[in-house]
Amino acid sequence: QSVLTQPPSVSGAPGQRVTISCTGSSSNIGAGYDVHWYQQLPGTAPKVLIYGNSNRPSGVPDRFSGSKSGTSASLAITGLQAEDEADYYCQSYDNSLSGSVFGGGTKLTVL
Amino acid sequence: EVQLVESGGGLVQPGRSLRLSCAASGFTFDDYAMHWVRQAPGKGLEWVSGISWNSGSIGYADSVKGRFTISRDNTKKSLYLQMNSLRAEDTALYYCAKDNDYSIRGWFDPWGQGTLVTVSS
Image (cartoon, rainbow over all chains, first blue to last red; front, side, top):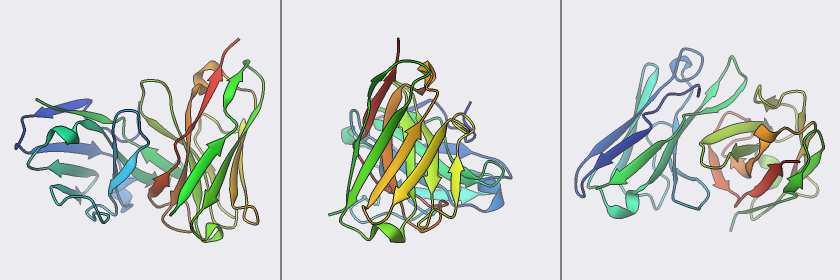
């Protein structure tokens, strides 16, 4: 059972928009700690996609966006492409655990 | 180019110990916190442990507390994870990751390619 809750899977057709939610609590997201998102392509190490709730590292397409409100955060992907098929994870800091926490991960399927 | 290279993984019997290493290059190692994150086969990411730039702040996941010890040697630009009393459930690919900050509260970028630890008799 992960501290941050994500849907196990989402899917969408090419060109469509999908969102992935990340629900936490008052000791992590709700305490004001930033949420970060990672993309893990099959057989590779995770790569940061969004940091500080809504910031994109250089090289990440603007099709990817992040937001945060209260005890939750969301990752939105517009203009879905086949290459977006991957696992996505949210991450934050938890002050009751005194450490980082991840969501359980969401598998994105491009139909 | 920032690079992290893990080593030390392998097959080990339950109850035994193993020490992982992570060699860093391409950045000022002692300016940043570092982390270990693991991924069991077919499962999600689990944060294992983090250490601040000067080793003054250290954290562990409850699942490894009391069994694993994280450390770093800034003169050697290296991160370590001493794993004792290993269990079958510790079987995973262990990633080394750089924090964006000197504390252990930031995001992880980049990640190494991982070293596989298999605990089995």
